[in-house]
Length: 295
Ligand code: CP
Ligand code: NVA
Image (cartoon, rainbow, N blue to C red; front, side):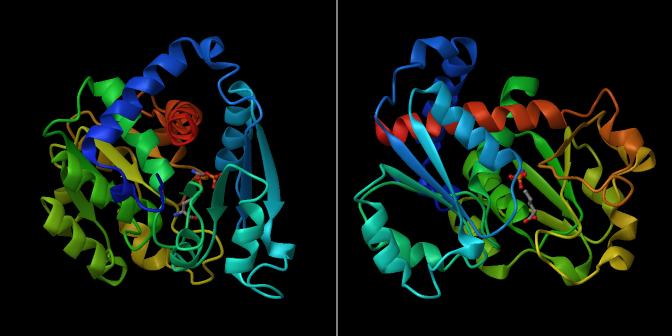
């Protein structure tokens, strides 16, 4: 089992994963010896607070070990091929998690090993985030069926792409408000259409959030993006005025957030903001995923 894209799992597997997540969250100690002797490699080309720390803590809680490796200073992809690196790593560890720029790296990685591979974020997808987000929404609303989600902001990014695919799988109504310059990649929309339904995409943030039970945004500057899109994104800021036009929506953000840019302090600090519960659930959903992959 791999998770390079959310569609590597089917709906039933995700529902199963959420059941296990609930159990892990309720009784963490029950699983403290589950992965004794197991080692996970966590390599990253980009920064990470939540993903890295929740991975390390997850392995620790399950009795296993996580090895952090900085791919920025590595020979991999420079002095040696990904193929050779993976063929070495699989002799040492039981699972490999990678945070990389180019999603294409995963083709080479997956084709050269039988041990599980997790995408801990690439330029195109962030499946771990969407697992935690769906779990959090289910916890808060009680179900996922036919709910209304609005995503507002830069929609040409990893979080949005994974959200689009997950919403298609779960028949969730997704409306995206974004500038015409930052619409999602067409290949993602084509894949979503094949699975189920496509999101409604509008350049009017108020149209996007109408009836929304959940409003999601993300950074206007993803990791290592140098272009400043502040001007075209300004009207997509999630602020109190925009939230007033929702169905008393809960606010979500994968974090890190740039307060005052994509979201105001007033919204992220409001009672409707569930960003820290969302961040906490990264830990619980990842524990369930690792257990499903290694057990
Ligand atoms: N949300 C998320 O992936 O956070 P990090 O970049 O800090 O890992
Ligand atoms: N879209 C953001 C997500 C951060 C977790 C980025 O790639 O930086």
